[in-house]
Structure formats: C-alpha cells, structure tokens
Image 1 (cartoon, one colour):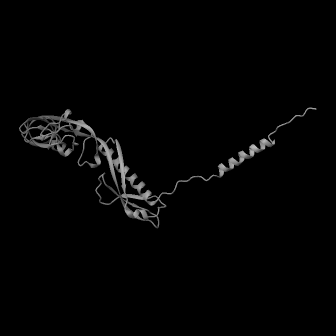
Image 2: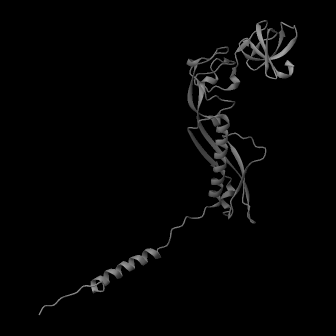
Image 3: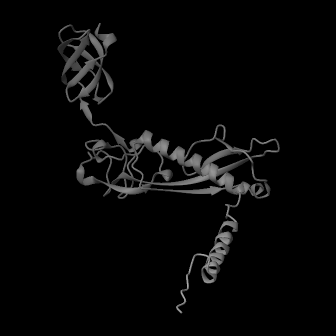
Length: 259
C-alpha cells in the first residue's frame, strides 16, 4: 500500500512561515514615523534673516554685475531671542528703518505676527567673494592704466568701499588720480577719464535734429574728458555753445542747444 503526502499552502510549516511574515509586517506598519523637531524661535529668526540677507546680496550682485564665487553669512541674534517662544506663523522680516545697507552688517527687524508675538532686531554679516580689478604694481598719480598694470583677483567686496570694477576693459586707458598700491582693488574714486579735448584744440561739432545731422568745425574753450560738457566756439557761426565730449576731437551738441 502506497502513501501519498500532499503539501498544500495550509500545511503546518507553511502556516508557521506565513504567521512569522505577518508579525514582521505588523511590526513595520506599527513603527512610529520619525518627524522633524519643531524649530525654536532662535532657529526661525536665523532662517528668516539668512534668507533676507541672501536676497539682498543677490540683488546687489545683479545691479553691479558681480560674478559671485562664494558667499558666507554669519548671523548675530540678541540675547533675548533665546527666551522667546517659537512663532506658529511665518515671521515678518524687514530692514531696520534708516539703517545703512552695507553687506558687512545688514540689520533686520524680525517679528512674529501671532497674538502673543514678539519683535527683535538681528544682524547678518555677509562675506561675498568676487573677482575684481586689482593693481599688480604700484600705480603713481597721472599714470595711464594698461593691460600689464591690472589683473582680476578674488576679494571680499563686502569690505570694500566705493564703486569697484569687475572688468579690466572698464579701466583700460583711464588715468590714476591718486597713488594705488600693489595688490589693491581699484575703485572709481581713484581714477579719472583721460583728457580727450585740450583747450584751444580744433574740434568737430555734431548736431542732430529730427533725424538730420549737421557738422561744423569748432574750437574748444576748455579742456574736456569723455562725457563732460564744455564750452565750444562754432567757427562757422562764431556762436559759443555747450557740447558733450564723445571721443578725441569729437563733441555733440545736445538737442535743445542744436535747435
């Protein structure tokens, strides 16, 4: 007599395996879900002023054509921030009224708009590294700047005063107004446009009106740099007019004076 054993899904070993699997599944589904701890008031303030300062830095960079290499933000909170309750609503952040906006110290007023809210003043110190035009050697007053005098070097522009240059072409051919030390970033206040027109020089006057352009010879009555308006005698009419220096020997009469 032959005995055949039939093993189905309901056999004892299989039932045991299914039971153990179910236990493990239950353990996984019942495990507590990790949640992020709520931010403290200090953390909320730090986040708010860092975001505001980053926006100010980016705005300055766009306005002045900076190519930022690196930005670092250091926050400074008042001591009372430690004892504040976390705000249940988004914080309101705005620059401190009448405060000078300098990147090395940006001050903000931060407030919690909840019923039991609070207001504090906090600051951010920004470090903004940008390639700027720098002198590679000492440049004496009166020197005309050339390619060999300058280079780009990375500087923290938050610490620099005055208008800086980020393109060597912008200063090429300009005149040093006062001595610039080697390695020093070059600012607009240290430079002058070159003299393009000398007093008594024979020049060409250009006037435009309703799409018609007229030219006449003239005599400069004053020295002039690019963009300056100087007095010029029209040698054809002997009339003295104001004209803007455009380039060497060329001046343009403003439209109102040309009529």
